[in-house]
Length: 305
Ligand code: HSE
Image (tube, rainbow, N blue to C red; front, side, top):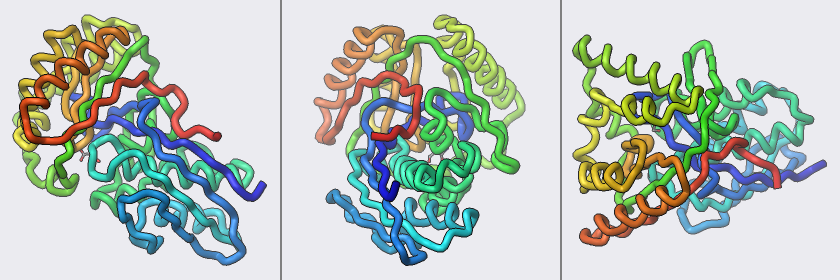
């Protein structure tokens, strides 16, 4: 086997009270990637979209993730990666992570699945480091494992897969740019203990609610007193979108990643579509272009095609 094609899913990270640790994979949108072996011991990038991302492998997230894998594998050949991105860079739904994860999962298949999922997350984090300046795994973990994942620790890497009941995500992506590094720079450096207690209580309850399928507990625990208040002013109409989505029946939601996307979770596809309608109504009153996706939670992560 000399060539493998994959679909690499978008992901929602920072699930409300789960900043930098709780994330989930979406079925749509996804990037399409083909990785093939080449004789030269190097990484070649071919972009098949119009985003103008770097083809220099040291400046491309898929390139640095693949280099991390090649360094660990000590192989005498290289890889060529062809990327067709459908997840817009800077959207807040794990665009860089989709590129890094798709590349390392496909290359690993070409190496006979030599590396574990945990090792692949570690390689893909090199891409996150390039994109945002930090080695966080809350997008790459669900992209590789699928479903909901909790990153208990980055060093050493420790990832917990979390069971979940039927859930449908509605994600609105306003076409404005928020750089992750800038969205991190505005976060508080210190947190009052009483807010920290509320956040970790909510995160514990949210994980329990996901595992047991308790939608009411899920709704009560999707509250964030630390990151959302600091970042929401970056996103036009954040409160309006959130409040109207809850009124339409959503369980809860918030900022996806570092924004500008916002997500809401619903129990049924009908409610998720109703949330799409009210989000559409709010953003139609602005002069900002936007996309809205309704998607199941993707149980698989990167998949082979
Ligand atoms: N946890 C990250 C952040 C996700 O919010 O900065 C964005 O890449």
